[in-house]
Structure formats: structure tokens, C-alpha cells
Amino acid sequence: MLRRTGAALLGAALVGALWAGGVLAHDHRPPRAHILTGTDRARMERGSYSWSEKQGRFCSSEIADAFLVGYPKAADYVLRDRVRLRFRKHQKPDDIDIRQYRKVKPNGRPKGDGRWKFFTLGKVIVNGNVRWEARFDIKRTGHHYFDVVASWHDIDNCGYQTAQWATHLKAVEP
Image (cartoon, rainbow, N blue to C red; front, side, top):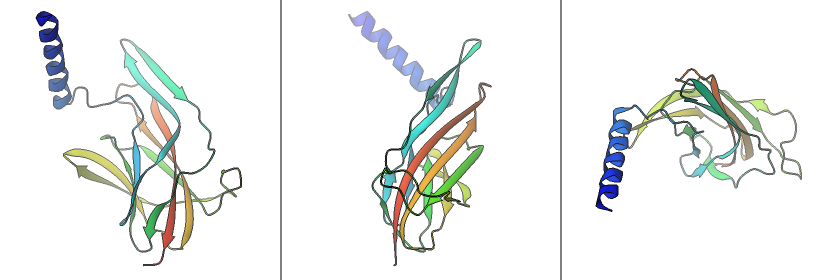
């Protein structure tokens, strides 16, 4: 029993050392994402994704197809604050598309074509970890619904990794 425990501890120490050294720092799952405002923070709901990882000489992909049945509860937003969509992944996204809608249908899906949201991309350090944020402003009060798609080029040369999120803000006057 002691031999197994010692081997398990040695294995855990090795994984920890490799992780700290950056060898395992490239994760192979879609990142969590949050929407942050000056007054609120909410987790963005992840939908569909396509994620790859290298396994020996081959690339393996995991694909999940999801469809929207409703946006999450609104995060509060005070006009003139900065909205930040934070991705919990240390690699910089290669591409981000943000689509904004003002209304949803009774079935919970967006109404109309929506608008592309312009943003700036910035790097932040949170508890010693690199994170990336898409930052933008909202100028009108009311509900705002967002569909977000982000992709990263896989560093193992397995193509692109892409994930989609949905989130919801309620903007009020200061």
C-alpha cells in the first residue's frame, strides 16, 4: 500500500512540476468565460465547440453541438462602464466574433440579424495567470443579448479550436 501511495505522490509531483514549467499549460478543452462589468460578474454559457488535441502521431477532436434555448440571467451593467468578456485561457485568441441582439423571441432565440460588436482585445494577469479580454461599451439602456465565438490555433498543429458562448446584460443609467 505504501508503495502505491508513494508512486501516486511521485506522479502528482511530476504532473505539478510539468504544469508549473509550462509543458502542460496548453489545455485541451474549451475555456470557461465570464462577462464582467463595473458592478457584476457572470459566467457566460458555453454552447457548441470543436476542440482538438494531439495523441501520439494523430490529432483527436471533440465536437459538441448545442443550440440555444434561452439566454442566461442578465448581468447588471451601468452605462459608461467597460464591458469585459474574459476568456480563461492563456493563449491569445486568433479570432473573436461578438454578435449583439436587442430582443429575443418567445422561444428564447435572438430576434433579427443582430449587429457585430466592435471591441478591443487586451491581456490581463489574474492571480498570476494570463487571461484575454474583449472590451467594449454599451450606449443604450435595456437588455442586450450576445453570441460570442472565439477560436485559437492549436499549438500542437491540430488545426483550430473554436467555442461559442451566450450571455446577457441589462444596462441602466448611472
